Length: 376
Image 1 (cartoon, rainbow, N blue to C red):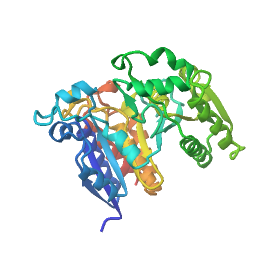
Image 2 (cartoon, helix red, strand yellow; image 1 turned 135 degrees about the vertical axis):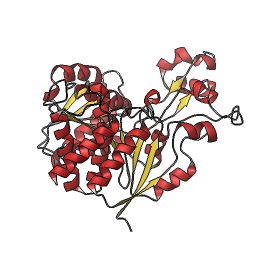
Image 3 (cartoon, rainbow, N blue to C red; image 1 turned 180 degrees about the vertical axis):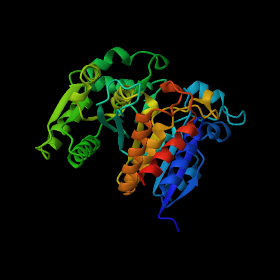
Image 4 (cartoon, helix red, strand yellow; image 1 turned 120 degrees about the vertical axis):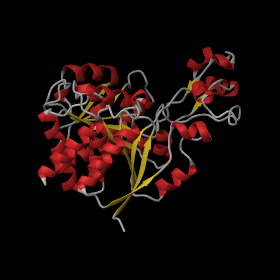
């Protein structure tokens, strides 16, 4: 019997291509694991009206962790048009399977390392090494939205808050609402995760990124809780910045920063900016991590126009695989794999189209395997 059971969810488009590359690398690493395939993504939305079927949820419950490729997502109206004709008009509403999995399994910590490896021609500079901790279950991605906005909700809020008065008497179809929900617990635990990581890895600072001067209650709660948690780590400075200013400072002085922590939507935004500093989304891995389960995925999309062409850069997928190996406790294998990744990038002989090369997804995978074997 294998030591680990891993849910294997390629998803849509080029998710299948990069997962094939990941399997080649995992075979070379020799992880003692059983990989159990599951159904997820756009095809299951179209055929079944559910991109995350119940059988896949059950699979996640029966495994140690999950490796995920990529999914296609489209706006509400477009998604409904692509449903099988037998499912249309039944009130089915598309919701992201990855967001559902994060919330269902309480994968509250979205960790996104953004590290520049020398030799990458797309690096902003070669000495950038940032780690973003994004709260993963709340905020504007909580999924509590209304359109049309119920009259009773608008009037109830109006009675409690004077700034709502100008909307209260508008027709419901004129108003769409999304609630930005923060809880004290969620703020505390994502900040604590960032400080624990900084402590374990000898990082120099933690920066909380919000907008409390304007979004006073939700961003204010995050910043206040960050200050409280920071008192438990007197040797690690807590810096505070606003999201808009942080985008500017990261472009101007990226090496001034180290570990970044923020809420769900701001984390989504700032991590993409950080990813571009180190070469783009083809180099950007992530881990969705809870107390007892984790799901690892590259942060890029499914790029359906390239599906099956083996054109896209698999580095983010291989880095996500490395994060999974590390999370499972196989530290030596994970470190060796990172060394192989760094060596391939530095050498620069094998590159996909995004970095000016002509190599395929599987060419890159083979080169990672070759370098891994050389380090053995």
